[in-house]
Length: 195
Image (cartoon, rainbow, N blue to C red; front, side, top):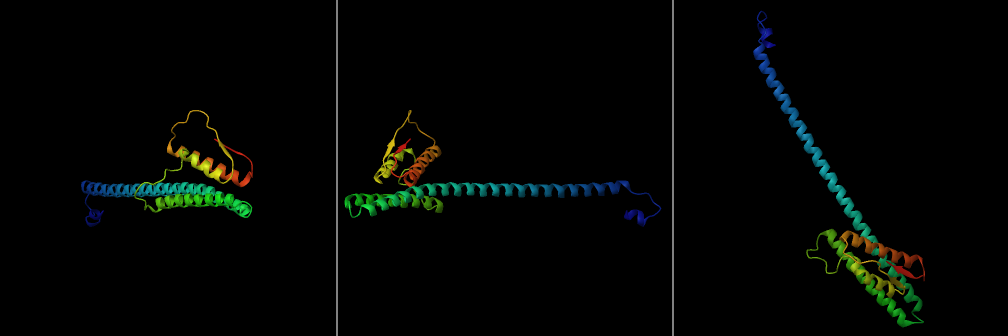
């Protein structure tokens, strides 16, 4: 274009202009490629951050469920035992003592489980927990604690016991724990049958 303006009577130099146009097209293509790559990197980064945020939310929800199950069970047991102890304190001190012993054990178990859960949250536990993770292997402890609270519980197991995946094992334990907690709260002196 500059050539035509400077030399009005001469022909347009097509070879020179096409070289400049080729360089301009290559530059525009490189800029577009760089922009597209940057956008893909930003999208991938945003997707990874969203996945991490979602994983964190799922973990917090699972921890909240576990804490609810643990707290609900033990606090309910402590509440029932405290009521029994208060009711029997004058008439049957030995039974009241038994109820207070159950309160002490349940509160100790609650504190241990809360420390374990909170330790995992803080990331301070460097060694594995000293107690087994809540699962059906601890069902006898759960049933005994409920019986110690003065509530009759019968355990019946049908079929062949077998190893379960850890998440299913924990979920089964928590379901039974929640059922016993709800029975203590709402069923009164009714008989409980487990499993």
